Amino acid sequence: MERSSTSDTASEKPNPSHHSTGAVQMRIKNANSHHDRLSQSKSMILSENVKVAEPINRHRRNLSQHNLTFPDIISAQDSTVVEKEGYLLKAKIADGGKKLRKNWSTSWIVLTGRKMEFYKESKQPALANLKPGYKPECVDLCGARIEWTSEKSSRKNVFQITTVSGNEFLLQSDIDFLILDWFHAIKNAIDRLPKEQRITSRNLEFKLRRSSSIELLNNLDTESKEPKPEHRKSLIFRLNYSASDTNDRNRVKSRLKKFISRRPSLKTLQEKGLIKDQIFGSHLHLVCEHEKSTVPQFVRLCIKAVESRGLDVDGIYRVSGNLATIQKLRFVVNQEEKLNLDDSQWEDIHVVTGALKMFFRELPEPLFPYCFFEQFVEAIKIQDNATRIKSIRSLVKKLPQPNYDTMKILFEHLQKIAAKESVNLMSTQSLGIVFGPTLLRPEKETGNMAVHMLYQNQIVELMLSEYSKIFGSEED
Figure 1 (cartoon, rainbow, N blue to C red):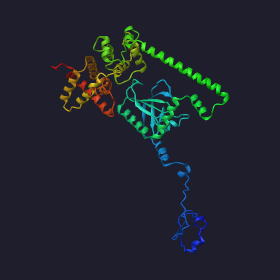
Figure 2: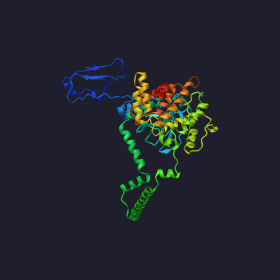
Figure 3: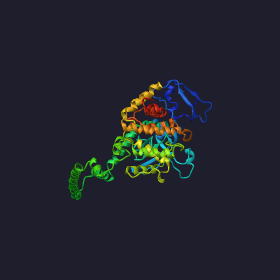
Figure 4: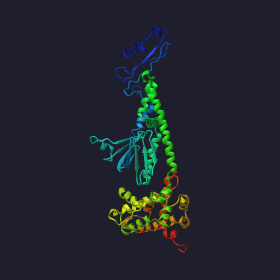
């Protein structure tokens, strides 16, 4: 029998009882191994007292040495994989719950498994990081919420991301399919995060909002220790104070109820002239009733201004105007001040077109009423062109008078824009993309938003191409 080498451990040392049982050991050596680290001894006959030693993993990156579980390793790998990157318009409107002034800027956005990074200066994040002191803005998606919004911005295709730390971001792009792709990618990334972490984060946010630091300290003091005898008087005083405070609150509530019940109605305030009717954000028929017409005066003024000095402008209605100037024009219109669009402050024709698009976008019910949306979609699906035009024409004729007259004058104007396509580069297809989602939309957004957007564009494009057949007389 060959003597065991010193590299064999104590568990492999021959036992006298082994010889008595006639144990035979066979030594197996790896010829390529040095220092006999991989040498092993195998016993063909093992006694009951012998236990096979488990191999020890001596690798420095052994998982047990770092206390990492397999899901942790997968999560760490997924968080570094870039799922999507590209340019979008970004505006941060809240930081830790504190509202910020909205300021749009173009950012290169990198989406990984559990976070987003915003880069300002470089298309490649690696190059941006080389600049000294530069750190990209990072957003943790764990527990975050994502939703479409039309109230936070007058731009189209805007969605909002709200983190558990109280940060709020708006992301936007004029390219419909691009912003839809980003929305679904971020939503999928949020949904993939562990539910336990999201629930914990939301509970923490809820607790922080519902309780102030003083209340937390008072609760801790109350739970941890009993009031001392010398503090009993102050405790009684606080109880009496809280009781009187409750009475004060009840009195304030009763006064508020009386004030609310006695306050004048909106109609009374409008009759007294204290509240003026708004042009932007009002129903189309109310604006027309107020002006005693079937087409809003503001729409007529904008169309007249564009046709006098904007038919030949490159990208008319596609290029956005200065948002601050558009909001200023909106304020002037809402205050019923005398409007002169030939004034120098409105010399940028894109401001006029931007205000006109905003007017139609902010209608509580679009120019194509909600009840007609599905009917127009079914009509545009008809394969036969003559039947499709006839169906669209019959639906247009059924519209309320303010909607029909406003639609007719608007599409007549847009037809003049399309006639100058060689100069302004705005075809009927381009105008359909711009005005489709603005003029008609479903009352409730569903999962097939991209399909609806395609039909919206096609309806506007067809009505522009076949304007004379749809809006003409029966003899035509």
